[in-house]
Length: 377
View 1: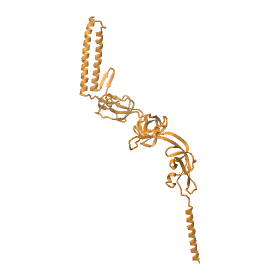
View 2 (view 1 turned 135 degrees about the vertical axis):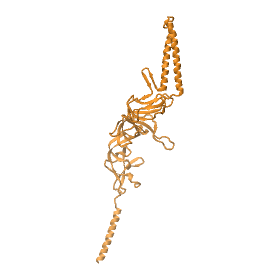
View 3 (view 1 turned 30 degrees about the vertical axis):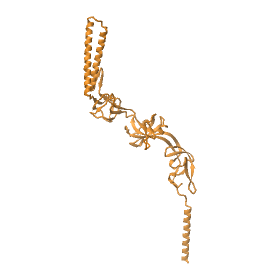
View 4 (view 1 turned 90 degrees about the horizontal axis):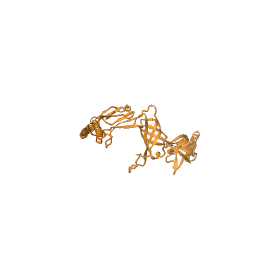
């Protein structure tokens, strides 16, 4: 009897347990969804400019005479003062140029001697009171001699410059040594001793021998998309990240936006035609963090604040669900699906978070639509 009772009790327990299991499966809670909470934050709409850090004022050093680099007095990175010698250029005239200059000097000297003799002849007539001292030929002879002397001096200076690169004109000293036009730092030296150079007077492009810059005044130069350029104006705040210092930020003010596009930001990859013109921008008045040593040419990215809203209800853009062009969010509920759609009105977006003007409140829970996959279809 006891054995039969145990068997009956065990069977009853199995039946009850099975019923509870199937009941529990039929009435299990809805699957849990990934959710986020609406929160207040500051949202910035920004324009992105890509460029580099450069000195605001730089000077390219070129020679006024053709020749050969004779001596370099400075090194790259050296700080120089205005008037300090930089490069000595040694003239390297062609045989033809040297012959022409010598011949021209000899011809001028011959003309001067002829003019001197003509004046001497007339002077003797004046001394004998044969002609007055205001006689036209006598006056012209004196003027002609003075002109011939000036011509000889000019030809002699030309010959001296061709031969040595040095000459004196009155109290002025002409030299082929190039001096620093500004206080600054030598950014680069592009020539070597013995290298031939082309002067600024040549019909060809003159040789740039080195460049100087005032490194105490560094600015950002870059390019922005034409879509962003339309929204930019002087005085906007900007924040720059310099490649060698990714964890540090440089603050600045937008100082210039180009009127004319000169660069192309992209290509369609098929025809090679640009689909977005780039406009140059300059950012100055930089606030450089302590410990940052800026060098000319450091690549940098600037973020220029176009518009800003503070302390507004926001959501990550990924949680939104669009029907046509209408934005919705999914709010959890007790329905069989576990959520329902709620239309929202959006405001400013920074590409990651978006301002929500209407539809939800601060702190409200929203289902993360990006984590649903195709489960909501």
